[in-house]
Length: 633
Image (tube, rainbow, N blue to C red; front, side, top):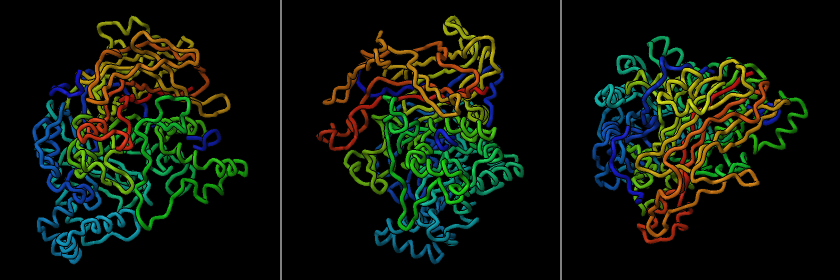
């Protein structure tokens, strides 16, 4: 089988202080699976524009997502998504949203200002990079915001244009266009960005201007704004933290933005507005890290650790002087000795989920009880997550030859991954249904392939439930779906989990299904373990407890692979063999595909070079991550 896709319309202090909402089941359960991207930038984002996306606006992005041919903003080729999406959030940066296109189009709100005239001259002289550097310095709080570029009149005009595009493309039951933006907090180069989107349309959105990090770069202030704006307008919001792998130890911190220990009020606010986390995207995978999960053979996947550094910015640590002063001598010594590892734990989702259990054990509230999704964070205007149809992070790195150029300082186009997507279990393709499903965390992430995944937890599932013709209905009746909380302990000794995975119809077979467990032992110490629960090809678990590798059929000379290994479908009913009713735990599913070619191999073949020259692997094992199910004693 060729890897060429056919066009198919298918639907915290670890061990010492280490670190919501309950998943509510839909009426009768969710019956349909919808695919989308909640994180997509167009030419209205200044960084996208200045890195060669001058023409792919929100309208272009929606047309690409719906499966229509579009013109690429950099290479000017006619391009088209392989399998269309069901929904999309255009999430341009709220900071200076639409300012650069407005300037170059002669909009007097920008072009007639002193800064506008200076920037116009810089563009004419080919000094776009200097413009970008000035804007980033404002976002990173190195210099104050420029009122010529940042005012309500400009912001309101651009926001209205974005909402109009969403309403034009929103077609209930066919395609959903959400209204949203990105709040791009980047304190000293640490990524704390959130994508914010709303359930409603322009009738609500026209009553406010998107909140941005020039107003405040503290998440607590964003949540306060969401609370007050929701109360005033009736709008419903979700904010999705993204790219936690480059958060510099701040995404799942032990403290709030002011250096104080996390409180129940903080946990409640965070989980009210942030039920989901973007765990995989173009700038790497944020599930876990090989240093944090050394026994996990699949931990080193699309590892990316480049901070968005800004000249003149200082390094920020999650361990403020105030926090260190609040600890006893023994805990303070532990923190100082293990600071690097503790900060790394604050960057990755698995450690964040486990840290949430620890914080809940300490204060009675969990600030990190999130579901997991994927999205692209593409700045080309194209939500492209297909390895053989990947159009880069920025428009600039959309061709094999330009992937050798720096996209972000110190990072090249080869380093970017073709990822990811969000899958949502809902009953209809509408703003309301999809939003509600994401709010209850009945959603999951994939790195690109459309792997169909179901995950339920309960106390008395059996193999007969898995094989029943009304599998999903029985699963809802007897337990909770991903994103939910196990009910009060029943008569059985341990919970049972029901998991089923089906390959993407136009992609590779599946290698295995794993369940990742995180829990607190009897001393309250965080623990983790990965269990292989279903696998292909009649393989067996070796004496070291590891499942033998599935193999690799990728031909490095052609980039083709075959589905002669792996299985198209895997499923299991699994009982936790290490369950202790007195220990808090969380469980999520990881589905692993057989090896397939990474975009680097395909481009290396096209260029006639060895893939080693890209600095990236020839093949990868793509995957899906479910949202967790939690157990609380």
